[in-house]
Image (cartoon, rainbow, N blue to C red; front, top):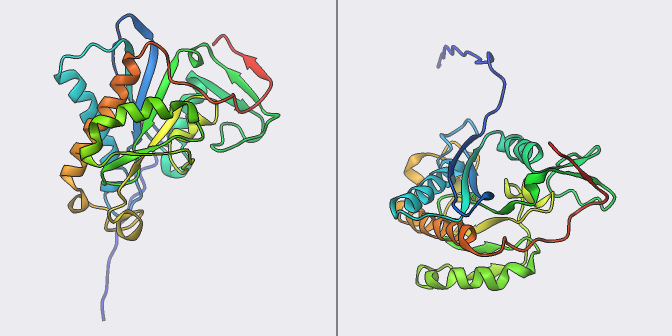
Amino acid sequence: RLEVNISARYHDQDLTGYNVVAEIPGTDLKDEIVMLGAHYDSWHAGTGATDNAAGSAVCLEAARIIQALGLKPRRTIRVALWGGEEQGLLGSRAYVGNHFAKRIGPQGNQPGAQNANAQIEIKPAHEKFAGYFNLDNGTGKIRGVYMQGNEAVRPIFRAWLAPFKDMGATTLTISNTGGTDHLAFDAVGLPGFQFIQDTVEYDTRTHHSNMDVYDRIQADDMKQASVIMAAFVYNTAMRDKKLPRKPLPGQPVVQSGK
């Protein structure tokens, strides 16, 4: 016979979700923005090591690499660690809606919404946005990029992946992938991408489980991912043009001066 006494406390004094945002200022194109991000919230059973402390750490390391090399990006590089992803991309959707654009109507900024008759309220910063890169599929190496149906980025990304062929990053797929924060950008016509990663134990052991702990992190894989993330972000910040966009997923467009 086993008796257990459990004492639990609900911390409900502050029910607001938070994003954590930082910048590396740009130079001649500093009013244009390149973003990289990952969510830092997690399920309660483990400590969220692979979902998604791993992605958060890679984003921070990518920014550190750019800073440590003394690079001066043309565009401003903005790092975002999102809250509320596990409840439905709440942090990234709110951020995109507040700063860039939001869908008007019952679906709001619902990721993946493709209502051709939806209105999209465009803010001035929408035009200044160059691209977003997300990491949220565990601790595994980067193997390529999901292009989210944006065929125009293929030759650009192919050239950027070329130096990392020996690291195993070679794949570009036109496919969409879902379930994470790049969808908040894609839903309003902004170029947002998730990297393809080795699954390692993500789907079979760690994802949303009590085994999502530090011991499951693969340090060498995360170093590889950090280098590739830094390269893609820096290349986006330095090219003459912003990344190509797909057609705006909704009409008509309502301009907003806010």
